[in-house]
Image (tube, rainbow, N blue to C red; front, side):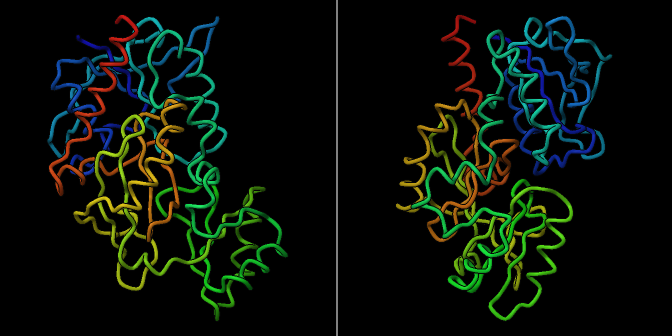
Amino acid sequence: MTLRIAIQMDPLERVNIDGDTTFALAETAQARGHQIFVYGVADLAWTEGRVTARARPARVQRVRETPGLFGEAVTLDLARDTDVVLMRQDPPFDMGYITACHLLEEVVGETLVLNDPAGVRSSPEKIFPLMFPDIMPPTLVTRSRAAIDAFRDTHRDIIVKPLYGHGGAGVFRIAPDDSNLDSLLELFFSKNSEPVMVQAFLPAVSEGDKRIILIDGEAVGAINRRPKAGQVRSNLVVGGTAEATELSASDKKICERIGPELKRRGLVLTGIDVIGGRLTEVNVTSPTGLQALKRLSGIDATVKFWDVVERKLAARGL
């Protein structure tokens, strides 16, 4: 089976070949003999009932200065000219992202789009876990100052997050004696009309924040991301370090709990974040960590991902 794969992503020229998950997915697909095209979300277009993208044929290579080699750009009808579309551009999850989901939904019946754009659109990464409040930390989503003050009075030590942020950006810890909450909320609320997420601080974050990779709703492995000393954010992009880890019994229960819903929504590649046995986020837009997982555990989740893709296409008669 030779597939034509279009990857909607941030510029391939700028990826980190040692850490980027999209690069690793493309590398494994290429090794299987599949043809790769890359394009940016700005290259999408809808015209006369067809969704197209101005895309470049590409070959990836583990050369730091030139991770991609490109052919001449072509206009692809994403429904007719491709077998698979990977939606892999980074957040922010804003109206531009949602619009891209709506456009890609138009081709879902004719080609395989992953993650499913309707599933992505309806599963913001901090909103999706609200379906499972009993496995989350104590959590509040609101713009109400009275509600935030009452939550802080109860839990004392809290984390404040932008609801649609990514990569740990804009995440703050407000300790019981910290007087910065008012200024912080003024800053948040002056920038947008969205609520914030407030959670009870989990001291277990000092021991790490597990990123668990799930393929088609089933856990395949995990890494532990440990924050810098004195920090609460463990994201690798803000200086966290990755280390090998195993799935605990509580981790497995969380995966078993949410896995069927991920699969139902067509969210084939996801990465969930777990701190101290509590689910904090479900990453569905462009989940990362697959290269670190392979390096630390030997588990190649990209192989498992393409195995699932090929099975799904075979089931559709392709």
